[in-house]
Length: 229
Image (cartoon, rainbow, N blue to C red; front, side, top):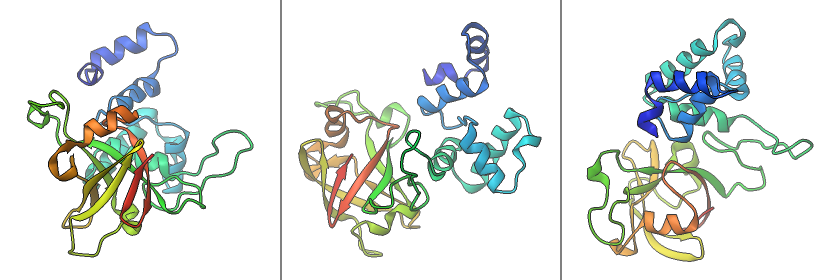
């Protein structure tokens, strides 16, 4: 699906042949299949541009999309990652009359009374076939990690220059021994792809619990124990 949606001709066919599908919907399909260049301009993205002193009304849909894509590249991120960060950074209401959600930090979208919760994302270690398991119970599956953005690492159990850290990760109803790693630049943290001292693959723990690669998740952190929610 990713290869199909990235071809301009297929996107044009989608918009032409499916009633109600325009640029935003076609781009949203790209977001759903984790196209790294995907940006779907909606009300939240437009509001963010206005807050950045960019009068979004002066620009077409495609021009606003290009602004986000170029900004992401200059920052060293994929357009999809920046799009998702913008989207989750804006306050929202779950439904009419519901309590207003206030982001506590970049990359998060959580109620103010849940400060021990952070947002994270399940990612693959790479897109090439070499990152798939070749043998064993996980054969054919991609190697998965749980990536945590820099600003969300403040409540994680680590001390500078002391990593990886031994943690317990709870997925579904099961607990696993895991390693929490940090990039040398402190730009991000991640839960490694193997659990229980290398005897169990993270992806095999995630899938039965309803999680998969490219999915955004919430982590509950108490000491050295982390729940995937």
